[in-house]
Image 1: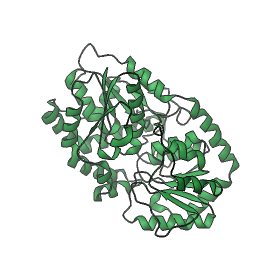
Image 2: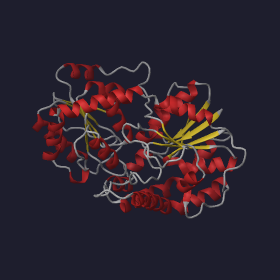
Image 3: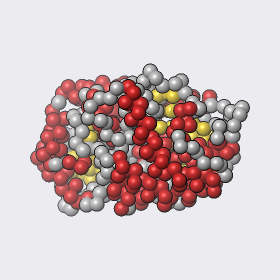
Length: 428
């Protein structure tokens, strides 16, 4: 089967679905993975053909609009405006590239960032579509939409459903004109109606894979059987990868350090946040590994207690640290959970607040420290507390055992292989 997968998001969006692409290729399928340059190196030597698009999400997140998106915090309107601007600049070239790279596909898999393009291509070619999602975005009465910070007070079931509807409609209508123009001019399809693609997926019960564990977010009873919670999808470290000697020596030189990294988050003034982190670490008196990430977190002066690196595979690194301080992105959160270590979460935007609340609820993280209000004292207090909380460490270890017992990729592959070419076209 010729399977095409696309992701237009950051590494946290692309890496899990890249793991599924690799597994499908290992089973003999002809797999194309379409992404932006920032994530193009994820699938080297896996047998997956990688299609690289023009226009890089990493550069976009470092732009003025990207910085506004990341700094939007609990303000969905600000986030949507910034995302709309990024969409406007890139949609035509991204959709054109995806169409070219996926020609002749038997199955289209869209990660949320590429849902519109891949669903449109599936419609146009009368081939099946599957939605791969890293967050529980399927509407439910059990909890509100995870795309913004949870409401201060719990909502009734009808309120949760309304919350999902409002957020989905806000997202759809912010980009509706651009998407429908691309459907017409690039794919040759009529526009989607007011309800948009999210509603279409639910209305037509299109196969939906949710890439997280039911131990973290239990499956609501009101979801249809087209929705599958598979467990997490982990892309293991490349074969032959070995840690730098300097990192190995640092780990051997003392107690397990604290990991600090914010993934694809960018900063208008990285030195300011770096100074805050270093001051908090010094107050606690712990060693640390800092991942520079896309934000360029690099200290001005070296320290024997702080090791700075660009990146390292989380599946290896998190086995050697005592605690992870991170932004609450779906991918980093999953890695910390699998490693069985507590988290201190500094959410910036979108679903990061949701994951922070879930980790607090299951006892593996203290309450979130939103980036917009982060202080030295607050960060130091949270790190100190997590390092000394034996109950939290035991809860994290227990959750880690449960996560490692699942095989989300195998479940996803089984479902993908069961999806047959439909006998009639997708409804337009």
